[in-house]
Image (cartoon, rainbow, N blue to C red; front, side, top):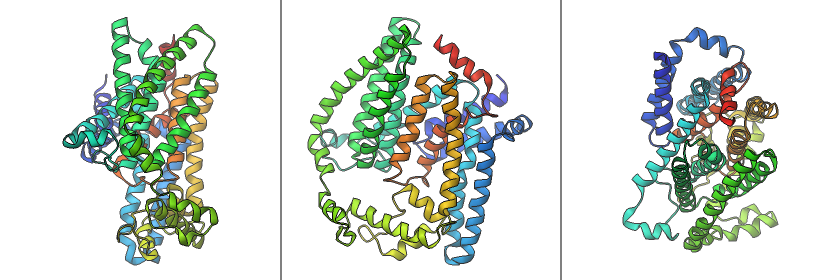
Length: 435
């Protein structure tokens, strides 16, 4: 292994482990990956210059800078915030850096995913309120995110859970003997239970809705699409046994947290009648009610500048002007990623984002259709994307360091498989894993 590869992979693994643990470790990991890439810049450029998604990302970063410049001129009092937010949106430029090291071979993603999950579990145990553990486990505790905002952290746990579900057959069958296979199954079951308990403790209704819409649907699609071979039946049997065991234990968790879950679901039932009647003025300023007011206000502001928006850092100025507040404090964003993009970058920005995602995931689809990408990889990558798209209707965490790291890692592995970027032997190694 070359020294540049050692340096780059060290950065990848450090980034993955600290992605939701702390920004310092993640930034150091990004820096190590970048340095290792620059040491082989000629080879890197030969690959990247033919990549359409990469060129579009470069154009997008340039567009972010131009909108920040225009917004700073039109709203000079927001100039410093415009450029600060532009730098955060510009973090998308790190995507090809992550993808460059994930593209080398499949096991690098397995390790990165395992480290991401390990980092999340370390955070859970480190921030666990041990002195009030009973209240936490029976659902009496407030929505809790283990040191992060509970809404995104529960979403990360859903993604970890989906990875465990779809990769379970591959990981168990790769064991060299029955002891290793049994130990792997036990570890995966434990990780699943920790994630499910964390999701319930988080009490994020948006995460629950997105998970309930995505996970069962993709599991049904997966079971329908597996091949009729003995190995295909074996994979689905392993998944089925694991799911039954997990569901049995989940039932116990749901019973223990029943009161807290139902209280969270029914907490704001007073808002439903005004919504059905179309009388927005009667919606109270509760958690969901404030979101609805923000969405209506955000759409109104977007319609004032529909094409290019108000600029990357205009949300603070616009929300403060609206008078909408929670406990006397203006919300930090519009609680909807799509409205956030429309307000900041207009319809052009939203279409540009959709086109980039289309280019990336079209490649995933084509590689699956041609047999190069296994079903478990395909269903995992697509289920993560669909989950995030639905989750983004209720939340907007895109400007925070933890969601940046999450996006770079899981969008990065999809980017790594795009044309003019993926290594040919990457898919050959995936094929060998199945044989």
